[in-house]
Image (cartoon, rainbow, N blue to C red):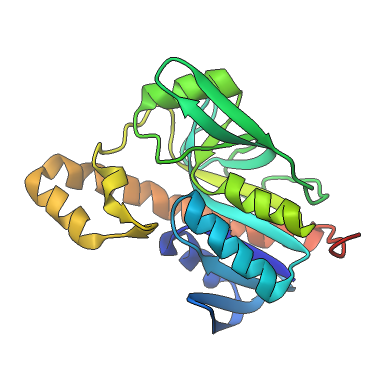
Length: 253
């Protein structure tokens, strides 16, 4: 069994469209989708944004399914100049950002057992195999993404991977992290963006209120939405292409 964990529905929906006969299964307070993707049995979940949501939901996933492989997937910010919107980043190291005061950047390495495979990009996008950095909140400013990239050597930043990786390691499951870039290190996000989420869930009223107060927010979100739609297709196509080639060890092996 493979568990594919994303943060929000916008990341999940393109993958679900490629799943054969998905069934909704409610476990505790979470709605999982079970089905077959590229010939592999999968359980998929939108676990909510942020490390705490990711940790709790990943732990429920392990208790419920005992997966051989846990995939943390979704959107991310680009940290390097060569990482463009729509590019895919497969994690080779997972870094948990512990400090960023605008001058000093500190992080911890998260030990993981990466699934064995040789990756290639089956589509028309670029594929990077590099470090993925997990931050406590969305990194909004392009200059901050560049600074974190220089300090860590990472290619992508997100808000969930390190938490999911820690749960996978504790459970003895193999792990894979994949991010598709929606905002490069040349793109700023609206300064209100982190306020759009409460307990890891997008609050549409907050988004609407911000757009009413400042039409520039609406314009910025429209651009991000366009990039996210492309990223969702790339991510789903990539996962579908690589699943048959993954070497799935039995848990505890």
